[in-house]
Length: 126
Image (tube, rainbow, N blue to C red; front, side):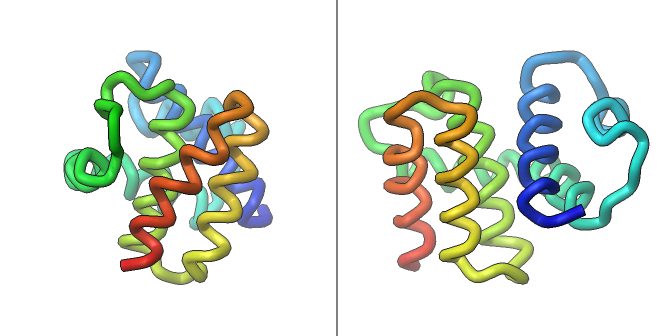
């Protein structure tokens, strides 16, 4: 599976986890139809594992919003992308930002991509 597809499936899985009572394994199997992909699973499991730290860091960079009040899709994209930026480090920050912006254009509203870009750019600059 290409990374773009893996990121999209990871987003779908994480979004599902945020909105249902599924376990991580159940959500992975449901979204990825039982197929295995190391990058996809690493992104999902890592984001879930580091969620408290990711949320704490996001709270420090989001202006005029609380994390809980963000639209769920934007919050999920930010969490997943921040995990990749901070912990995976195998893709350049520019690629991670580009992918996050594309996902927010695909799944969010007309303002989502600018918001996601603004927040993630603060992390990429560090």
